[in-house]
Length: 172
Image 1 (tube, helix red, strand yellow):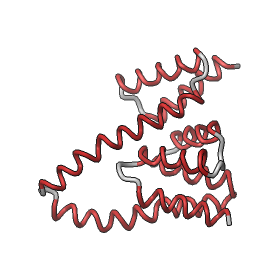
Image 2 (cartoon, helix red, strand yellow):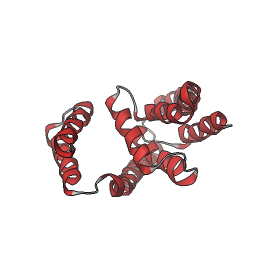
Image 3 (spheres, helix red, strand yellow):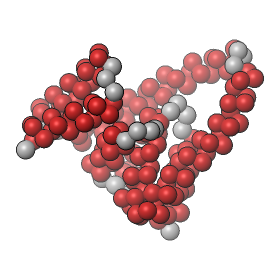
């Protein structure tokens, strides 16, 4: 039953999230932490951190969550659930988009969708920061990494690894 639930939750996320992988974060957090209580906030944050270390999209976090909850089969069902809708939707939408890319209605719709995705990402960032930025040291790490990534444009994987090293230095 857990495998089916994992597949269906990630299938729903895969079907209804637009705007890239980061737009999935609010839905994953709502379903797995708040709605079904499969994960704690800390476990969810850990899964996001691990997902950022690996190459590939944010959606690969589904693999980690599935594995944590139901082993290999949970990872497989979660990954299929989150990626299959995107595959089929992109096959259809890419064909439509190429035919209509200069359409003013389509352009206008995208001008509305993009800021909405930013709002969703900001909302989940603020929500998750309550659980991960709990002292001055963690706040300093967050601000330092933000500034370095924003200003120096370093790779996210390098930022995650660097913050792990900072954590070792500051928290042990």
